[in-house]
Length: 139
Image 1: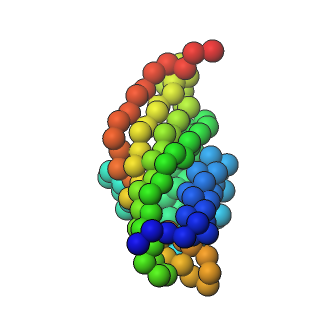
Image 2: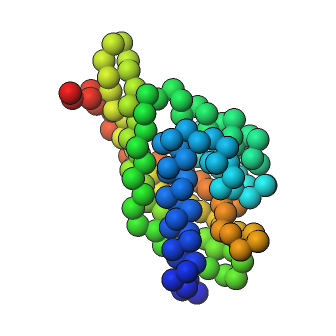
């Protein structure tokens, strides 16, 4: 069923808040975007519930900075639940052997959402990695 404009905007904002929380290192705010039993998973990792998600996302601190650019999103709303796919390009700056590098990732998030007390949250978010590119960062 096509989503209402209000639901689409709320789910787009949820994806934008996710990206901002990662990039600003707002780990408590990040985990609050998930339901209490929410799951965040991807290649080689799986985190469940707020405490585990908040602890696990801190691994992003290995990068000097990140920049997540959220692109198109398609959603299917079914009452108080929804599913969708969100595209993202994520940039990660780090240093290796004295050289600054930039790791770019082409990501498709496979999302399950649940509306709780009028607010959309991630019930499950799976990161599907389509491609990566790791290059020296030019000044």
